[in-house]
Amino acid sequence: MVASLYGIEQENKAIWVFLEQEKGVLEPVSLELLTKGREMADQIGWSLAGLLLGNNVESLTAQAFSHGADQVYLADHPLLEPFTIEAYSHVVFDGVMDAKPSVFLFGATPNGRDLAARLAVRFRTGLNADCTDLRLDIQGDLLVSEVSGFGGGVLALIEMRHHRPQMATVRPGVFSVSQTTPRQKPGVIPLPVALTEEMIRTRILHRVVGEVADLSRAPILVAGGRGIQNNFEMTQELADIMGGEVGGTRPLVDEGFIPRERQIGQTGVVCSPKLSICLGISGAFHFIVGIDKADTVISINSDPEAPIFEYSDYCIVADANQIIPELIAALRPVEEVHHA
Ligand SMILES: Cc1cc2nc3c(=O)[nH]c(=O)nc-3n(C[C@H](O)[C@H](O)[C@H](O)COP(=O)(O)OP(=O)(O)OC[C@H]3O[C@@H](n4cnc5c(N)ncnc54)[C@H](O)[C@@H]3O)c2cc1C
Image (cartoon, rainbow, N blue to C red; front, side):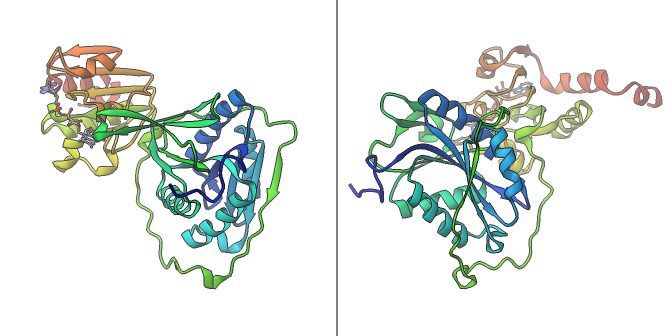
């Protein structure tokens, strides 16, 4: 077994969270990880630190402290704007090798995934990707990462007994966010930045930012499955009337009814809405992963034995294609009804 660059004997009992920011705005998943990190650190008596890189981003440390960080390691440098994998991996590598945290968490965003994977190889440690839950084994000082495996058929609990840091990525929306009173003496620890332009091979020439709705944070989600057949437009209309976002199961994405960024589930978006309405969806495990954090689930399915009902607060056995227009008519604003 290849040893990691540092081991259990040298580790510091600390949880680190990569605080991803874009143009001076923290990614919400970083705050979700801080919230979860605080909970775990309190259980085991460890410290919680954020790692923040960017240019003129020091003001973001206050947000990290109000979400539970004891310290923020800060690398502030013009060459850290924007994110480039060479610059970020170089600075983070040095910072981690200096402080040797036991646990290091990342949001499973494109940049978070990129950075975590590259660093795991450099540290010669493992990386639990796309975790659906995290906890600490207090007796063993181990991070326990929940990962779904074999196409979602099993949930695996993975521990890294010998390698450090114990690294994991978690998708946005898996954990909730809560604020806390900042610690008594939160500290900003500057990280040295030994970067030159020549070290950065990536040149960003042009950025195209698509208009993609963030389903992971929508308070109302209306999701359609194969059972709604070709009635996706009606499902969209229902979502619009309710002020929610529309999503769907993978078959609807594969058949081209909805864009991929609106797929809910294990290989799509993990949502945590207050209300989720599931129309003509069977309730396969792969889909359920995407809605099981919803406060209330209402499902409409013509099959009384549909597995989705096991996860639903309100179960309606009916033809969704009949119910959707009735719901739209009932919820349509009164003025529109008068004009119709
Ligand atoms: C590795 C892997 C990853 C996957 N990732 C995802 C993922 O992220 N998201 C995802 O959604 N799927 C994912 N899948 C696919 C998943 O396993 C299911 O196949 C899929 O979720 C089923 O979609 P569905 O419920 O729309 O269709 P079906 O399973 O075909 O269910 C259709 C349902 O509609 C009901 N119905 C039919 N007619 C009506 C009607 N008129 N009114 C009301 N109800 C009706 C039926 O009773 C049935 O329950 C993944 C699969 C694999 C192998």
